[in-house]
Amino acid sequence: MISRYGMDEAFGILSTPELFKYAEAMGSPLYQEVSTAAARLLKNEMARTLKLLEANRPHLDAVSKALLEKNRLYRKDLEQLLPPLPGEAKKA
Image 1: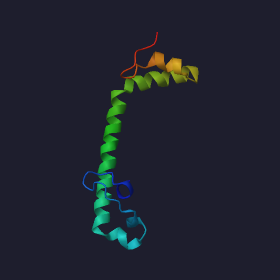
Image 2: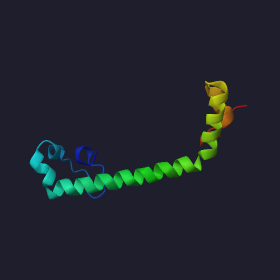
Image 3: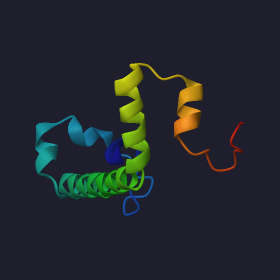
Image 4: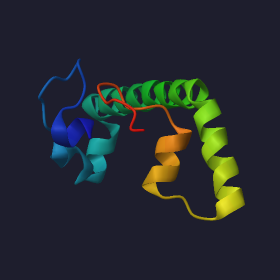
């Protein structure tokens, strides 16, 4: 993503898809920087994901339990189990 779409603050909108076309490019300093940036991005996103999962653990447990009991959940089931999304009122 970083070399193709420039999804890193340090690289900005730099796009370097040719880095992965040639074997010699793998040893270049730019490739190393891109690789380090990708590792950092993945580490940050993994930490963010784990934090979201931990924060929502009660909801995940409730959905898991309901799935074990019913085998299938519909929208109305999820609306009863989960809190409303921000900006939405809970339907009666």
